Structures are given as C-alpha cells and as structure tokens.
Length: 154
Image (cartoon, rainbow, N blue to C red; front, side, top):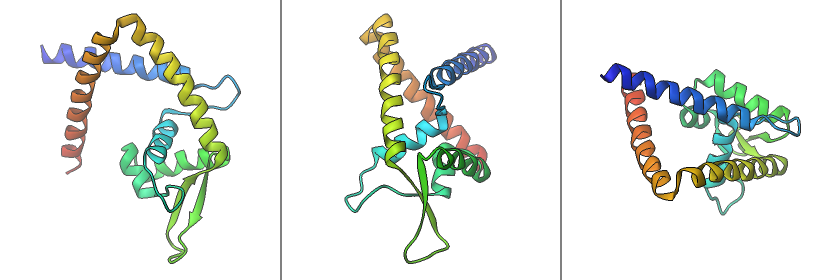
C-alpha cells in the first residue's frame, strides 16, 4: 500500500516539475529555471537594511539542497544572463557573495507575476477551500521530505 502511494506521489511530483519547467521557459527567450526562482525568492524574502541581501555559495547549496558544483552552475547561469553578480567581501577577499542585479530583480518579479496568475487560475478551478487543504497537506509533506533528506545526509 505504501509502495502504490509512493509511486503515485512521485508521478505527481514529476508532472508538477514538468509543468513548472514548461511554464518557466520564457516567451521572451530568457529561461529562468526552478532553482533560479527559488534562489531569487530566498534573496527577496529576506530584508537587509544595510543593502542588498548577499549569499555565500554554501548558503545557495544548502538552501537549494544541491551540491556545491551544482550551486556554482546555477549561479554561473544567472551571472551569464546578468541576473546575479559576484561580490568580494571587503574584509576578506577570499569570501565571495552573490547578489541579485536590478535586471535580475526585474526578471524575477516579471516571472513571479506570470507564475502567480497561472497558479491562481488553477486555484480558481479547484476552489479556495480545497486549495487551502492541499496547501496544508503539501506543507506537511515537504516538511517530511526535508526531514528524510536531512536524515539521509547524517
């Protein structure tokens, strides 16, 4: 019984990922991948009164739950497109941070607005109450996935 439920949830997750990738492929020729969106969300959900939010590569790797080489690849993609920039630490030149550029923030905000309209259309189809129930269940499921992932890393 667990095996069937596991396979079903896995297939749903794969379908959602595929839909997300399709929806993220930009009509303006610029692609923004799921990891890119997650990274921008992390940067813009934090507030720093001293200036732009900066992250180290280890923070990126940990937050996205990917290897450091994969994090570097993600950041390189964003730097190449002018969405992010690398900034050296003033007090320790060995430390390098990444931060969003104005072009990156604009691209993220545009893509976020598109995604929210897209998701709202789906929410309207299933209704607010069911969407809220789904959100609660997904939140619980994601927490369980994070816990299992952390246990595997120990």
